[in-house]
Image 1 (tube, rainbow over the protein chains, first blue to last red):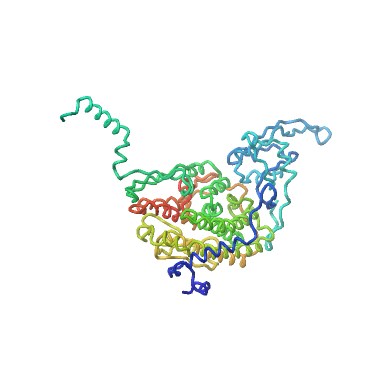
Image 2 (cartoon, chains in turn red, green):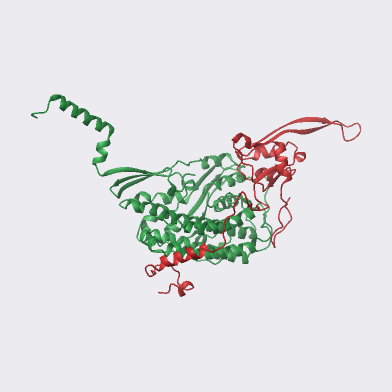
Length: 176
Length: 391
């Protein structure tokens, strides 16, 4: 029956039965054909794929932007961000004014063993202190080592990618 | 009883009592036995246990034991804000994370009276259909393995990876996109997405032909699936079976067409149905739906309107009091969220209607009287995800 020419009009595998053994031969031919095609596998440790710029690999912290507002720690669905800070007195801006009090960041840890990679913390940060980086090679032998401190988060922040340009028809306003 | 001493009698009695205790002799002698399939079994898509009472090769009775993967999402939703819940619902059906977000976000938007801009609707449609393709390609590969064909999974997963790659390039996550926000999206499409989609969709169309050659046209596959595990329409409807499982039994129900949401009413696609209702028909329906999904994506990419990717929404998402049930056609069937809000940032109650839970409920009826060799074919063809059953 129309196994070959019917590709356009008749869907193979439809209630109309193909001839016996035709299916087997077709399948074996498909396997043989694929055998001589280019291989698709990336040999990971030797060859690395470039991750997408938007890929949510790891969160980096730009510590000087952080004002210890705790928004990210509060909005995190599984509370994997630990922040500690203290207040410091700074000289007043104007002569004779009151001394300013500034929040100083002491500790900013993200526990990547708990993190769900949802990106809510990056989104809610009002001062752009948190950014996504597509880096992904930070597996550890011990689960406690997945708690990244400020220095490590700063390292990730240095390795972030610039956001890609947008597709035609996109309105760019309103994006921070 | 001549010739048998009382000591021998008591020894026999001891042995008999011991055997009755251990139960070895009793089970060996009777032809009936209880067989546990799972909870850790490669063909159950998760931790799923089937307690089967078999007589020889024949299955007398099957009891599915579910709940091993219960993560309490419905309760968890009562203590999380709306933006936080989208990241939870991603994980209900982990093969099609994006499609899970749609009914929840639509429910929240309906309660708030917000309509997302048309561009958002189209992008959501494209990504939902991509999730559908990824799920169905996974099915067509894995079902081959369950039937005994090793080859198809490599073809299916090669091109499934292309689709997941596209989802990642837009959302940042392959499985857990968390890309929808109430009233819009996190961001717009990156440049070059439409061109890459066109290339990937051609590859998906090719792999559909390949899989048709490799599985659905294969004589052995047909022998094992045609006429096996037939779900009659009335029985399927009574058990609440949905999605491709019920369409394979002749029911032309598709929420995308019947209760239009997103950009589906403006796009051209067919509802694939079959009347046979057996394992083969279910696999066939999924293959054809993959092709329809490609058609939807290509149509949506052509008609993609320009505009903003976010409607005007307040900074803090607060949903006014009310109740709404929003359903959507997920890859596995009807997925719905019954959302009760009493105002504020947190829902009062969320009831999640997942397709796999209803699809599994037909198993005891379906497997009764079948043979052990058909069990995996039937269980695999229903295609449930255990995260979706237990949530």
